[in-house]
Length: 594
Image (cartoon, rainbow, N blue to C red):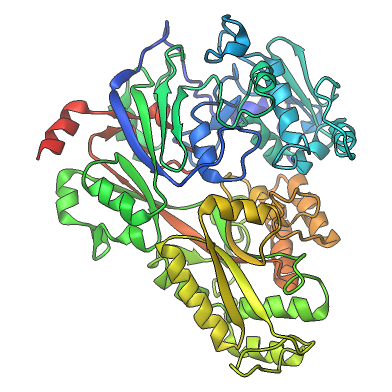
């Protein structure tokens, strides 16, 4: 097993440190970036359960590193770190130096003084991340990874107990003002790197807010919150004291023109980010075509509405609008609540019911109709381009209507009611309930799912609810079936952990527990060789198919449409990078006058 040694972590971390260029640089308040997002729930970087919130607050809070804006394959680039981590002790000790002179934005908790970012802020923030009493329920995989953390977490999880933030953790410490040291129970590169991109909060602010910083984000990032009108709009202002940075370099020839166009610019340039909270893709498309949004992210059928015969509409191409596509590092799956009396459990009948449902769903039709071909039927848990993905697996989905019906008949679901729907083995009425967010694409999904369930004699009803409400219900276990996306990082661990038995309920939405799966998950985390990671991930896919707590369904293709006046744009695969964008105001005014 190959592991990075002292100093060799530089090969894993992009040496594209964003160079400061002197005194604080003021972004241009006339440059207003107009974008759209699904509704968000919080600005607290340690208490979020949804991607839209994450995409917004990552411009306010900063990790030690971030995934390089231009690099492929992905690699870490320093943000507040002074350079790459020094990895010693056969991969079990990581030491990172924090760059001096970085400051949080002002807050009354600081008593009128400038508050510098120090290593202890990352210690505190990672302790919040593993706190089992916060709304995410902690982070079990990280608690097991840092030496001494599990004992502290277990003590906090006892009835009536609280997390002791002053209690030292041997594997999470700041030996001096600007040094963070992580000591691990075993080598684990993907989880360690994932923790290094997590944003830092100031303890004084959290305590002054009584632990609730949902609407009081105070970070060191390039932007700060001006206004949050829930369900409507978020406005971010450029941080006037943010250190000047340069656009990243790239050796990729396909990036040469982009890098050249941004060369010599002091960033950030955008002074205001105006985020409209729009759940409907059709509304986003209309706003974009009117010039009201500078770029949009769309998926599925809506992504094809600005195209003709697979190409951008001629009138948009003539204006200089550009289109970018990529397969998301996310798997969308149908989750089954293993604690639900109707559909959960590991007895023969309930496993067979879930497997029959999986066999009855025509995922190729789903991709063709609902996603207008803008996706790939999932044949495994790990998406393409993510570590652990097995390109050798057959592409054909599970769909087999006849096999689904035979299975249901064989295990006792053969009796029918007066309407022709199947009853349970106990002779009682059987109804499946699918939780799904409101929206046009969801209506199409409902139509196809009901068609497929009707075809095998299963009655299905739908609980349609706004996105954020659906998230809350699933985290609370108040659902039977749901369509959920997981992932968003270069490592397959993020899509495999939702079925890990020790994962908190905000991650393990199915409440699945299987020792054999947990062993394979541990093998994946310990592996640094691609072949071993693929073998472990394949084992987990096989177990998921056998017990069916979750059906991998779609690897979505994301489409970004970009206005010609937006400069510096590269598809935001892992997070938003507003700080690297610029706006050609003269071109924008000229084109909007037409």
